[in-house]
Image 1 (cartoon, rainbow over the protein chains, first blue to last red):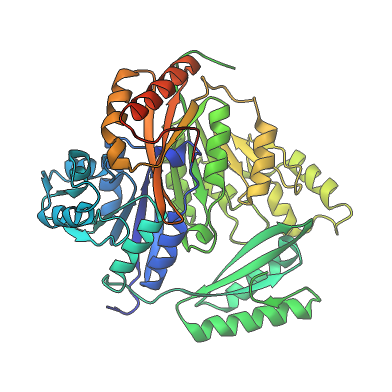
Image 2 (tube, rainbow over the protein chains, first blue to last red):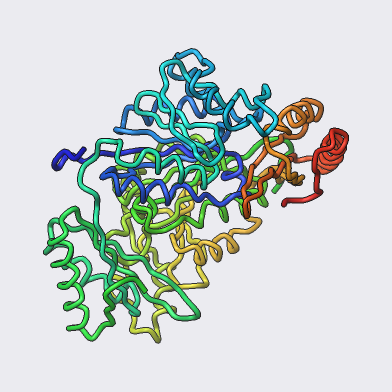
Length: 253
Length: 253
């Protein structure tokens, strides 16, 4: 599944009034980003939009062609505000069908839970031509149509859906990272950071300040697809910091 | 500051490789969404993009004209990967200047912290014509240019910057909410939810399933700008649930 050097990218569309109202703190961006990274796919853009058919359609059309993959979360449950499947189908000009395999999943899951009601049957709808993403947690599957992966909003279900997709997508080399922590301020380290990045062409450096219990410091994250280059850069960075009598710790603080 | 009935909207641009790599879980979307809501402004769209000048410029131009306000987080520190100010200035075709007031803030803050070094002086840069957003936490101010509010990425600094903007922006009526919890499943409640929404035109209903310690249920959130309509709808919803022998709790579970 690995093709050399080509960078594979994905976009994520988070669909949900509850995120935009501040009611719910999103937990899916970070887990999907980390999972994609392990598949050798870079998360290049995220959009959060309301449960609105037009907004969903516009965002899907804008994102699916610009990236190798598009993932969506949210809006595939049994209630009237779950409109992701019909909105995406409409945008793609595909009819919505009751997917027989999805219905079979629901029949099995709800057999001893009161059966498949009309509300529950909504969760068997897909655009015509879709395949399913397994959901061992709560029965209702996710949906794959072309390069679009339509997933649930509940983080635990997303985790399970990602597990079922593990290793099935084409990707490049995973981005590796190492972190060097320092109790010095970002502005004291800025020059060394810039010079180190300049001398290590295969690595990208980022600095992430933190404040904890009245003290502060910075975690310096080095990223590369090349493990040896990564390790050389980390050692070099630590040496440069220590040489200037600055604090340097191998690993995140 | 209140104008009747007009809906004021904002977009949020989260700038940061660390969010897209999965290293850092975003904490700013929820706090900015809640704060905007209190100002009577609706967060209508969020985008998360990398520390990339072209991506920043394109997103800023796309979002600033579609909304009353655009907020950005991230990329205004002292290091070489902090490129938000120059990227936005370039997109707006404005020169970058050292803002005298911002420099004065830094001079004061760093007086007994080793003084303003070249790296630290980067944090006094603004597009020409900008005003400042106070930052009592760490000296370096945020930047306002037109309807764009450029803020830090560290959540604690964002909190402080939002506090300093409290009550200064024009907005409409804040959206109020009430939550009714139920230990029944979303699919058992779907029909009641839809019928209740239909009968309460001033309210919008959303349902948010949860799984906890092997049990599950759903929180039903009612939103409205009208407090009386909100309370009528909540009572009606509780009565409809109880009448069908379903679980109903006043408040989130």
